[in-house]
Length: 97
Image 1 (cartoon, helix red, strand yellow):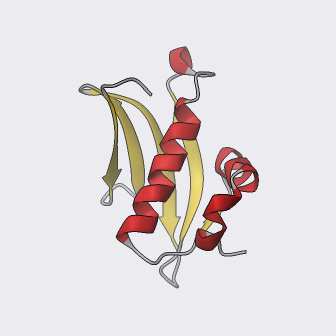
Image 2 (tube, helix red, strand yellow; image 1 turned 180 degrees about the horizontal axis):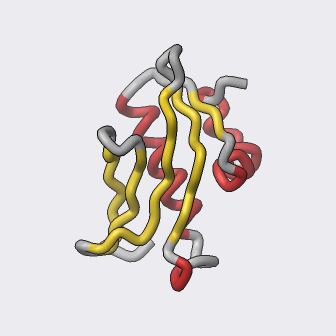
């Protein structure tokens, strides 16, 4: 991520937004389960910025924010987040597996 990139938790929109300055350049969207857990359903980064690790940084920051904010269990139907979780076992404490 560039120095000006930030991740914001948009609770109302059920998503984490990656911003570069005032521009949204990515997001990862989730649904809340009845048990209070969340399931990541979609992740997207602006097409012109893909293949630069921004999606991974977005997901990592979202998971770190969730870990710090709550005691929530997560899952993923989004293939990108599912693959990220498989490759980054340090987030196993958050998964609902």
